[in-house]
Length: 125
Image (cartoon, rainbow, N blue to C red; front, side, top):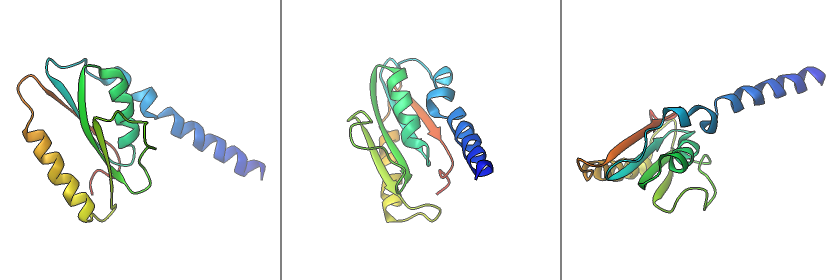
């Protein structure tokens, strides 16, 4: 039991050390002249989008595409960021529709806008 507790504590410390709140802020750009579109995909997508939205500032929109069960509770992301859960490791219809919406949103960006792409494990689906 003591070994199991120690291993669990070590695992929790390792996971916390790579959290979006610790790793992402120093790598984020400032606000755009236009809007910032946050595209976050993968199991950590929602957490990364939340951190980015808090730090980047300015006019923010976005889409988070994550695995079922890996989204954030309502209210944890700005209303301007849509959160979509879909299949992984096999893509499903929900993921296909999300990809279409992402493609359309990115195509609409202008010269003053910036695209912030945040990709974590699971983004391959």
